[in-house]
Structures are given as structure tokens and as C-alpha cells.
Amino acid sequence: MSGTTTAASTPRRRAAGAGANRWVVLVVLCVSLLLVAVDATVLHVAVPAVTEDLRPGAIELLWIVDTYPLVCASLLILFGTLGDRVGRRRILLLGYALFGVASAVAAFAHHPQTLILARGLLGVGGAMIMPATLSILRQVFPDRRERALAIGVWSAVAAVGAAVGPLVGGFLLEHFWWGSVFLVNIPLMLVSLPVGRLLLPESTGERDGPWDVVGAVMAAAGLFGMVLGVKQLGGGEPALSVLTLGPLLVGAVLLVTFVRRQRRRTHPLVDLGMFARPAFSTSVGCIVLAMLALVGLELIAAQYLQLVLALSPLQTGLRLLPLTFAAMAAGLLGARMLRRFGPRRMVCVGFCVTAAAVVLLTAMGGEDDAPLLLSGFVLLGFGLETTLFGAYESMLSEAPPAQAGGAAAIGETSYQLGAGMGIALLGTVMNAAYAPGLADVPGVPSSASASASHSLGEAYGVAGRLGGAAGDALRHAARDSFVHGLHVTLLVSAGLLLLGAVMALRLPRVMHCGEETPVELPAQREVERDRVSA
Image 1 (cartoon, rainbow, N blue to C red):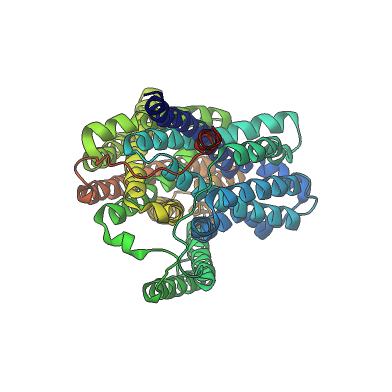
Image 2 (image 1 turned 45 degrees about the vertical axis):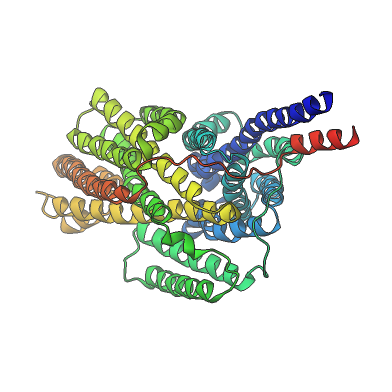
């Protein structure tokens, strides 16, 4: 009797210990994600201080800003699949260490080239950390209901990090030198390394066959070319320029070759068979389309707040905070909505709510309308996060556990590519709608009109140099043209979002909550050792 009781109570204790440990693991993973998300945006406010201190050239300054996201996006698949092979925790801890070292190098950089190198190393560390957090989460939460809640918390933390970055950077710059925006990472890494080693479980995927080193390098180089070309296009480089077309063509050829190589291999780096599953391929498409429609729009909205409404950077950040809070709320409510409505309705409704918010914002004009902006940004944040939550959760749940790292890397790469293409596409739409309004402004020379047509900021500069009635006329025309261009861009974005709602109809109607074999957590191993020794 007593033996039966002991044997029965041991699994209960083991399950309780594992259940408690899962949520501790989630906290550790969220701290990792917060650090990477903050670092992606914290430098933006420090650019003027960096420029004044290091005196970088225009090309060097561009690389200081762009190296981190460019390197990170390129290496996500490489490190995601390597984690499946050698251990996800191992890759995550190496990412922690590299992130800490690179942060120290960046903080004390005395030359632009050193800062560019450090930002590249930060990108490598970020590429190690990002897919590892999602793939470990996928393994630690085998029950889909719990996993949905965990992904909701994870996505809410990502929203917080993106918003907090500029605020943290602004606070540090008011009290310290620009290097402090990087130095703040080091204490967190010093804590995360031992805590992660102690608490995070190790897990791997299938280890049959050799790891495809050539395929991994090919994927990284192809993605680098594609992301670089998209960034060039988004930065205003002509579409047919060698600097844009060259990287895009090279990247596309390498990625096509990579896909063909994976199909021929017995043990591919990425199981492309996942894309044959409608839920997986549709989820990836929804992620790309959501970011395509909205990231460029967010940048244009920030310009509207500062240049049209003349708000300060701090006031602009505060106006955009409701978007972040709404996204956090959607992330925390996501698991409950997913269980009640299912992936299809949740993602479809998320797209529709976001499209409604975008259409509502077409009422923005030359004067400040705080209630309108508040309503629009709240709907925008809630709808976008609802869409991304449902798409990420469906994608991860559809992927085999052994391919968790590769699936997470595909999701993150889709996010980055969608964001880059969105900046390029909506930026092009904005410029096409903005420039014609400045072609024939009374009293303004054609050369001044041509310069003013590049951007609203440049138009204000030209108007200031002209002065008088001509300057005032150019300023008013530029502001009106920008608002018109914003309205056109909003309508194009709404169309893309409605296309996403149609695409989401291919997702499963209900949430299937099967449970898989969980990865063994440290607490489970300790209980098992105690049982054996007893």
C-alpha cells in the first residue's frame, strides 16, 4: 500500500515541480527577449550624440544604424537550425555572452568602424537569442493552452521592449554619455548567464545526418542580400540602382538555390515540408503581410506627429504609447481569445480591426485631434498584436517539436522581411503621392520645388531658406501634400490588411489542444535522482 502511494505521489510531485519551473523558464526567456527588443530601438535617440562624438561619414552612420537588424535577420535561420542540432540552451547562452561582450565594445568605441563591428556582433548575438527563446518555449510548454498563454506573455514583452527602447535611451542620454545605452546590457547579461544555465532546460531536435554547413551559409548570404536590397529601396535608393538591384538579385538566386538544395537532401537544414501544411504557410504569410502593411506606416505616423503637428520627440513617444499598451493587452488576452474563437477567426478579426483603425486614421488632418489619434492607435495596437499572436501561435504549434528552432527562425525572418518590405513599399507610395503637390507652387523656383519633393523635413528646410511669401507657400503646400500622401498610404495599407484577412481564412477553425511529450526540466531530473537514490 505504502509503496503504491509513494509511486503515485512521485509523479504528482514531479509534475508540480515541472509546472512551477515552466513559468520560471518563461520569465528568463522574456528577460532575454526584452533585452534584444530594447537594443533594436535604443540607439535611435542616441544617433545625434554618436554623430557629434565619433564624426562618422554618411555611409558610416547608415551602417551604424542598420548593421544590427541586417546581421540579425540574416543569421536567424542559421542559428535557429544550429540550436536544433547542438542544443537550444547552448546557443542561447552563447548569445548572452556575445551580446554582453559586444555591448562593452560598443559602449567604449572611439571610432565609427569599431561601433559598426560591435553592432554587427550584437546582431549575431540577437540572432542566437531570438529563435532560441521561441523554440525553448515551444518545447517547455507541450500543452497548447499553456503555450498560447506563454506566447501571449512573450509577445507582450516584445511590444514593451520596442516602445521602452527610445524612452530608456532618452533617459540615459540625459544623465550619461551615449555609450551608456549599450553599457546597460552588461549587468543583465551577467545575471542572465548563470540563471539561464541553472534554470533553462537543454533540448535538441533530430540529429540524423550532418548539419548542412553549406546550406546554412547560403541561407545567411541570401537573406543578407535580400534584406540589404530592401533596406536600400526603403532608404530612397532607386529600384533599378545597382545598389538595390544587385543585392536583391544575388540574394534571390542564393535563396532559390538553397531551397533546391534542401529538397534534394536526405537530412535538410530546414524541413520545407512544413510549408505544405496550410496552417504553417498561411501563418508565415500573415506575419509578412501584417508587417508589410504597418511598419512603414508607423514611421510615417511618427513624421506626421513631429513635422505636421510640431510635437517634440518626447510628446511623439507619449502619443504612441497607447498603441503599445493596447498591444500588451492583446498579448495577455490572446490565449483566451484563441481558445474561444480559434485561429481562423482570431487572425481574420485582428486584420479587420487593424484595417478599421487605419481607415479611421484617414481623418487625420493638419490640426491635432488627440481623441482621434488615441482611438486609432489603440485599435491599431490591439488589432496588430491579435493578428501576430494568432499567426505565431499557429505557426509554432503546426511545426514538429524537432524543428522548433527552424520554425521560430522562419517566423522571425518573416517578421524582419515583412518590416523591411513595408518600409520600402509604403515609403514609395508615400513619395509618389507627396511629390506631385510640390511641382507648381506659386513663387517657388523649380529647383527648390524639386529639393522639397524629397521629404517633408527637406521641404521645411528649403522653405526656411526661401523665406517670405514663397517660403510660407512652400511650407503650406508641403504639409498639405504630406497629409494627402498619408491618406493614400493609409488606404493602401488598409487594402493589404484586408488581403491578410482573406488569407487567414485558410487557418484552422478551432484550436486543437493535443499535448506532446515535454522536455525534461532541471526540477524533473532532481526529483528523478531523489527517487532513484531513495
